[in-house]
Length: 454
Image (cartoon, rainbow, N blue to C red; front, side, top):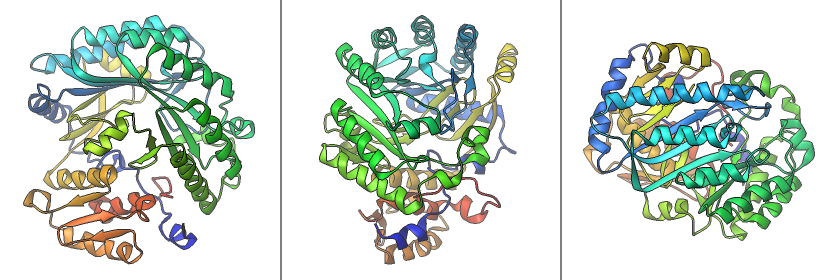
C-alpha cells in the first residue's frame, strides 16, 4: 500500500459500531421515558419475526491487560459474582415488564471484562435466569468471550449445554516481549487446550482475536502468531488494529510509550502481511478486520448480505433491537441508544430503586436514521445506494463532493445513485464513512476522541 495514501488518510476516526457515534449523542434531550418508548416500538415491530439480541457485560478481571479499552473491574475476590448476577437478572426483569409478550432471543453474547472469571455454576444461574423469562429463536446464536488462561472444560461444557455454540478467545500475540508489554502472558498451550476442548465438545464456531500495532510488535511477530494460529485453524479470526487512546482508557495504557508502538507504515505492513497469510490459509475477509472460513456463519452471512454490525461488532444476522445488560452496557433499539452507568455501586443503587440504570443516550431523528443505514451498508458491504427517497438526505451532494478526492485516489467508485468502495479503498472504509458522518462534519472535535484509522 502507498505510504502516501497512509500518511494522507491516517487520521483519527470512529470505528462506526454505531451512528451517531457516542461522543455525538444528544444526551441533553434524552430521557429514560423516550428511550423506553423506542424500546417498546421496536419490540412490537421486530420481536415476533426477527427476535432480539442480548449483550451481557461481565466486567470482572483478575489482572489488568494494558491494551484493553473495555470497562472492567480488577479483583481476585470471586464473592462479587453472585450479587452482580442478581442485579443483571433484576435489570432483565425490569425490561421484560416493558415488553408486550415474551422476548424471542435470537442472539446472546457474554462480553467483558472476563466472562470466564465467573464460575460455571454462576454462569448457568445467569443464563437460566435470562431464559426463564424468554423464548429462544430456532436459529439462535449464543456466544461468549473466553480467556485462554482461565476457561475450563467445565465452562465450555456448561455453556454448551445451555445452547452456546460460538466462543472467541483473546490471543493478541504469542511473542513473550509483546505479552509482557500488554500484561497478557498466555502460552500457546493454553490457547491450544481451550480451542481443542471447545471443538471436542461440539462448538461450531471458534474464534481467535489477534491484534496488530501492539507495543514492541514486529512484522516477524505477526507472522509467527499466524503461523501458530494455522495449527489450530479457528473458524473465524478478528485481526484488528490496536487502538491507542490513553486519553480515554487511562493508566492502563501507560505501561509503554508511543515510542514503543510501530509506525503507521509498519503497522499497515503488519496488516497486509497478516491478511495475505490468512488468505493463504483459506480465510475470507469479512467487512473490516474480520476473517472467516467458508464453513463459518460469518462468511455465509457476507454472501447472503445478512451481515450486520452493532456494538458487539460483526454478527451473522440482524436484529433490530439489542438490549445491553450490566454495568456500562449499551443498548440499541434502532430508533435510539442508551448506555448504563459505568460504576458498579451506582448500577446497584439504581436497580435497588427499580430503575433501569441508563445514564445517557440518543434518540435518532430522520436524518440520523438515513445516515446510519448508509454507514451500516458501507461497513458491512462496502457499498451503498440512494436510488429511492428513503435513502436521500439534504446534504448528500456535499458528501459526494467530499468523496471526490477519494475517487481520484482510487478508493471509491461513485455512480449517479450509488457508491462502491474499491479493493484499494477497503483499508480506508472508516474514512469513507466519515464523509457521511454529518455530525462529525458539522462539529469537528477540539481534542482527539478516536483512534487512528490506519
